[in-house]
Image 1 (cartoon, rainbow, N blue to C red):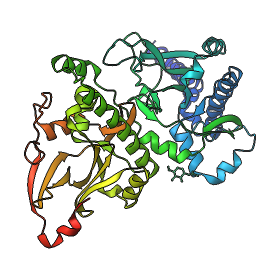
Image 2: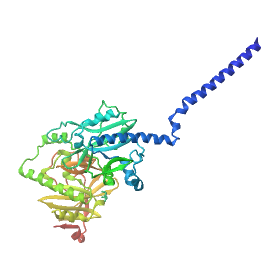
Image 3: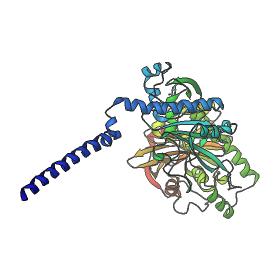
Image 4: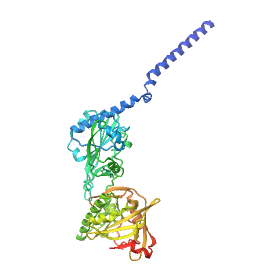
Length: 458
Ligand SMILES: *[C@@H]1O[C@H](CO)[C@@H](O)[C@H](O)[C@H]1NC(C)=O
């Protein structure tokens, strides 16, 4: 009896281990070998996925063409590939469906579209959905309607995301602003929107609002598809890097103007008109020379505090980094009909130029970087005394003042606070540039022997 028992147990063990072995084999063949990770070893897998993305793009671009939407490629990765790789750029003429540029190894391809063209194509979204694209439309307030008089902008479409088979096509709408440039809004999801719809952090556009010059476009063939691209791709990519746009703080400006109403005298109105002409002229002249500038001192305060100019300030102040200085500046302003009124300092130290146009002065202060601060100089002509104005370092953003696209320090409040202190929001009419600014420092005296070169008054 015990002998029978032992044989029986042995057979049972043998059978169960065979069954377990078979189960493991079955499990491995059915599950483990189907793990997608194993396919990564297979180069065909990669080609397959970029084929899917290419098919999406082909379908989408055909639809856009049918609806006559002049989309253009605005994707930073795709455009960088196109501009850098001259050899492959020649290949793009070949009508071969390889997604080597448009896919760029990313699950997103971005396009931009002038919004004026968009409004003509209401059927497009429906047609895209019928083709299988899932749609996320992001809307926001229309800043063109916001002003000091009305704050309630109507909502307008800002961004469209089209999703198919896990790939995203991002369409950024570009609106024409009164300063003659193109603007896109920030992408802010409403509470009801699906935050997993797209990998939002990977998007090229939408973290901030942006401002662009209208790019000249070129119709070409990329990856076998007809695509519009900016004619000067590197210029577009540089603009994209520096596109961040700050809207004026209309709400706060309105509160300010309720406390301190704008001067509506004829003289003040006339000053605002002249300041506008001068600012536009400065933007054009420096734009032609490709020299970035920002509005500084009282002009910056006016924009930040009241979305306008301070009418009793009597001049327009701009800043330029000394690294951007070029001697052509003076001739360019002269050619534009402005006369040099004074030149203080030198390129190495405290350079300052002042031009006169129509009895309004344009002061150009050159800024010097020094560690984590930035400073500009001032000179008193009659005494040769030097002054220094120190600011925390800042980056530059676009903004609009008097219907002119200008740059402002992005960290505007820090800049204004450095210059005007904590009471910047209270108007001060008697202002002494040598003692009133919070950040002014006495900086010695120019040697008398050098005055002739360093203090030039015309
Ligand atoms: C493209 O733009 C860059 C930067 O603005 C400029 O330096 C370059 O000359 C432009 N190229 C052409 C071909 O216009």
